[in-house]
Length: 150
Image (cartoon, rainbow, N blue to C red; front, side, top):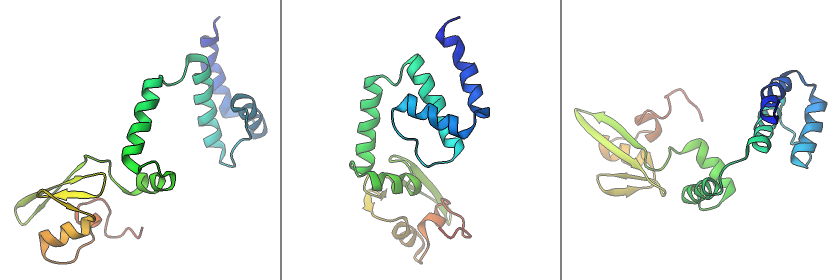
């Protein structure tokens, strides 16, 4: 039996392993203290690490590509990347909305949005230009429901 054959059993065992033992495994596999996150997080990261150590991690060129993409998205600002990942659609995404029989296409850019060849900082400005009235741009383009408060 090879090391690879043991991986499925080891991953399955994580579900029933007591939390203190998961934290012990974390210290052994990551050589650091476990973060103060929930059990599910520990299980998923340990599962990835077990496979990474046995089968190998990401190829160096993949890591470089991911880093470049991250730089394009947030300019290297870690706080901005967390905020932006939660709120902004991915650069290049096309938002399509029909208004009074006319289809409007907005492209998400690294700096905001583009509509009819012009850059905009906000979707609300575009929605206002299209409708002539004040709109929440996120609601207008269907990225958030009217009831959403965040």
